[in-house]
Image 1: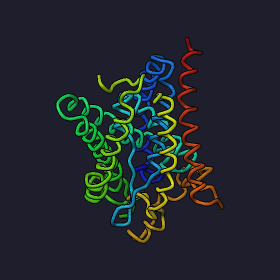
Image 2: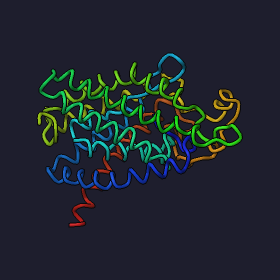
Image 3: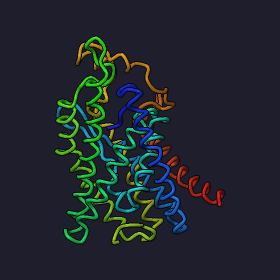
Amino acid sequence: MHIPDGFISPSTSIVALAVAIPLWWYGIKQTKKLLESSEDSVTFLSSMAAFSFLIMMINVPIPGGTSGHAVGMAVLAILLGPWTAFIAISAVLFFQAVLFGDGGVLTLGANSLAMGFVGSFASYYLYKLLNGRASKTITFFVSGYGGMVAASIAVALILGIQPMLFVENGKAIYFPFDLSVTFPAVVGSHMLIFGVIEGLVTVAVVKFFEKVKGVAYVNA
Amino acid sequence: MSTRKKIVIFLLVMLALTPFGLISEYPAWGEWGVEEFQTMVGYIPKGMPNAGIEAPIPDYEVSGMNPIISTLISATIGIIVSFGFFFALKNIKIKNK
């Protein structure tokens, strides 16, 4: 789900960055509030960012010769709030791109918006919607599942519009498969497999940490 | 269990799990190299080659090192930069006050 540099046009990347920058700015201010709320919050916040980094490294193979991974978006959104989750995932994506070549530098805006913003906020609002109405297990699972599927829709859209917009002499300049391919491939695999993995990870990790001091949103 | 102990155990478990990511031989859907696009669509999209930067540890693999150890090193770097980022962010705020 990490879009590498060269897969989308520089104009797409710049539009995504232009959308992301004000959101990062607001998110950083929200995150600072959380950091100042208690002495311990920085340790917990950092460890949740590290968790997101590590879980994205665990590629799970699926039939058809591809793989994917959980992101931890719902864990972070439920335990820290969606703005801090967005900042933490964006920071992780930045380090993955510049240190390990996973994802891209110019595409950081697009990747942060998809996995960080769309994923975290979809997870958070699903959590808010279900919290108290459904069991905790169902609430956490649906939050993770829905966040992941929402993020995959964003990625499928960003990739799939490339060959519709940027073609030269009948050849795609960037990602060559359009929405009719990216939707079933990216969204389909996340609905069937990776969303379920994200849901299960969310249930396990949120239940492990929900009583931790300094946690902003859970039990709210 | 204290919060700190819980966090340490959790991160150690996560770290120990990262080498399982090596089981998958295939990249995520779409995250192919240029040769694979050549095979699939018959050409290399013009904007793809040479895009982006050269990362110091591409694909989490320290060159010439055992893949499991190199994954664990990369994961450890991931933990360090995650902590570094938020401790820095916390301190920047204090200076601004």
